[in-house]
Image (cartoon, rainbow over all chains, first blue to last red; front, side, top):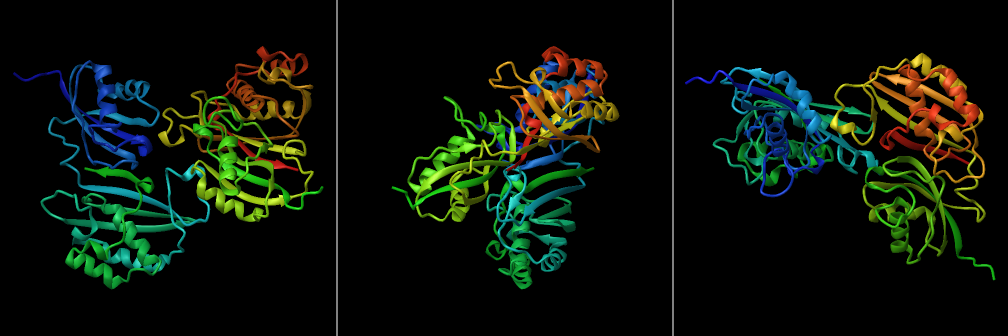
Length: 249
Length: 249
């Protein structure tokens, strides 16, 4: 029998990932998924399973994570935002909550994702940036990094640009756009693509940094793209500079 | 006999106060003073006593705390900056270290201090601001607050604007300047004075906020200044919005 009270709810979530083991529930440690699920249970009285758009890693932040769940209740979805924010830690904020079509899927309906990475080049990093911006002591050639970014854009096999632990059917992804802007000592990398492999954004930034400091050549990066050779790409940058900015459906 | 190796050293220190019980050593909890003293001992091999310009409270931040100590060593004071930053938590950064005259006193030679208080007026505060900006849901009349600020400037008995625990010889202080600027949803209060009593800046901001939302009148504030009546001043604002910005000697 059709359940008239069942609604699929979509949440947009902002979080400071510093003190979390990541989005996904783990055996140990605080995860964003679990804390939001527990808050939903407190409000609705129902245990739910949240499906998120992106499994952000430990210490990675989100400005617009998206998740869905099913709620067997007439509780107005729009009011969940305030109710959940009242309960949740200040490290997580629900930016919006609404009923969506029953077949909406936060994970499989994603068309594009945008990630931002923040990197400073300064001698002494401010204590206020320690969890929110990565830091390098190298001076970086922005033009060389821009040329490398052009190379990375498009459809490629990114096997050389992801964690060895990545379990996927295919390493082929399309990066629509890589933007690099500089404001004083802070460099902002913006990546938009149809999907990103585990650690891929952090390795892409590591590669751009290695090109910017002259440690890798464009030829090395071409080889990493063609041969999937992880050793020709840059190192994995720290998670604290990474932000899941926006999910497009 | 005069000790030729004794030098008085001045440090300028930036810290994120979130996880500290404050500047001053306490029986329990992490204090900035203690962590810097321990780092100095590791570098120089000597137990020292740091004298700070301001005893910032728990969760209060500093952009330019100043402290002095005596070091019986030929270790170049200028190199302490890098040596201490290597050891210290990322929550504390030594911005400069140098030898000063033997009679310099970071506490008693202070001529002026500048504090900044950051306050947002927004419905949902970003997780990234939770430890660094206070928040209020009231909309505030900036012009009314400016008029109140004019009233508070100058030499006054600030007995009505400090913690009941304040132990001082006199409650008379001079505020040279109060500046209130607004950028989008964030209001920045800048106070410069010859000294501030315990909790005074946070109570001054609480008073300005109460005037801005229409809960207190300028007449109330006049009474609080004239009679030292704590109940006529505003409440103590939370510590997280407060920054010790600069010490003038």
